[in-house]
Length: 67
Image (cartoon, rainbow, N blue to C red; front, side, top):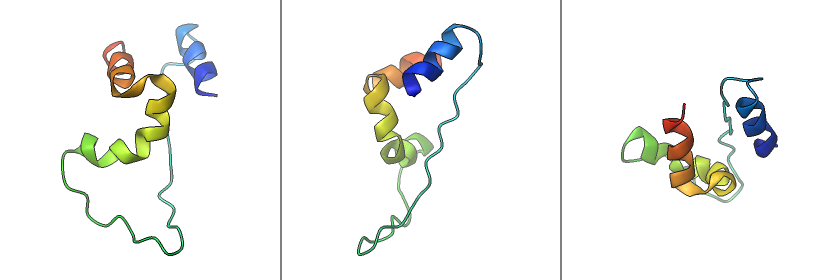
């Protein structure tokens, strides 16, 4: 799905991707609570599946720098 979304951006059909991932509590797992660090560091754990699809943090940085 992400590859198709990126293709749509390249083709000019869309301007950006908005990645949403809900914070769902799992039974017998403690809540994440307060997260230290910058905004990017706080969001990094939720973006792991996205990173896997676009070549890691470097892939995300490349996409962001490219607009």
